[in-house]
Image 1 (cartoon, one colour):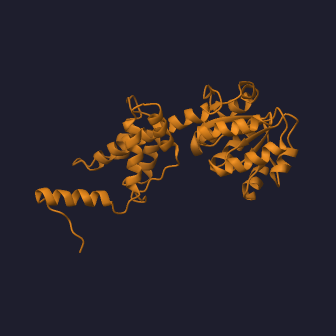
Image 2 (tube, helix red, strand yellow):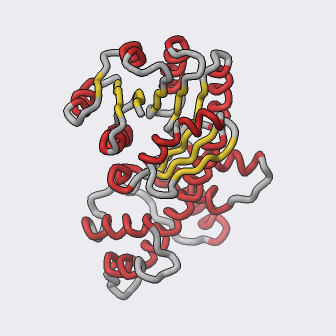
Length: 299
């Protein structure tokens, strides 16, 4: 198929390469022209503007957006719905909020353009391993776009989730689960690291990959990280979040679903960003006040 692709960051660049490797024709545009030039060398068709990209697509146009959630999606959508024709398709492959996706889909539908939401998982390894794709929106448009999904995903790694917003909703929950899994691994490895046994963390993590009930791709990545830096001395203990965990917790609240593990894993990330926690100081002060417990004072 011939597809337009906007947004050539780490994931977008690799996704275009995967499409090219399977003989799709890809017309690319990016706010920074350097990745465009890089992909032209691999067989992609570069574009100077979004208008130029649209002009280079066939009558039935498909444009994939791989840009940050929020304003970048809206900016590109607003431009595209003025350029595309009824029956054309826009696919948002980023981590957009599912409620915003429903609003965008309605705006596109007013122009008779299909807006598909496709949650994309696979990170920087997707070029080699494929991307797990979770997509929603107009079913006919989704079926028409299936050759693209089939190329980007590994075998059986793509799923139609339902109406508009469902793909991003499923990806949101996927990332919420990821938060909890990562936090559990992090806590477990800290207990091992502080144990009195001098445990070889890379060796244990590697052994857990074979037959253990906690084996996973995340654990495989933990092995890689620990082999590169066994004490993780090159890293700062600072963990940001990109929003999906917060949205997952809000959805849990809205749906009256208890989600303590995911919630606590998000709050643990907040704590990592505090150089000095006022809450921890307050705990120390209270213990001293009621029980005379020792505190550590600054010089």
